[in-house]
Image (cartoon, rainbow, N blue to C red):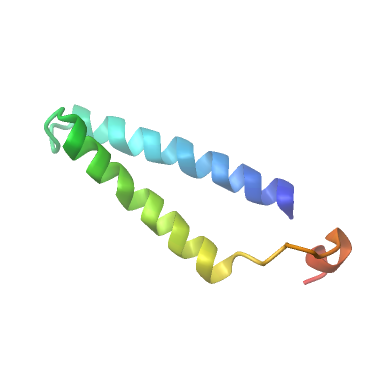
Length: 69
């Protein structure tokens, strides 16, 4: 469960980086740091929303009880 989550997190950060680079290359966003950072917030906000909606709470729980659900 935790390895899967960390892999998903790593993949999402790579996808966000590729998205920003592709956006700058396609000239949708001017190469301004402010606009690029603002566009970078979009995947971060989506990831946070997904974590809040689907991520299990693991604090004070045994690993066995988390992986069975």
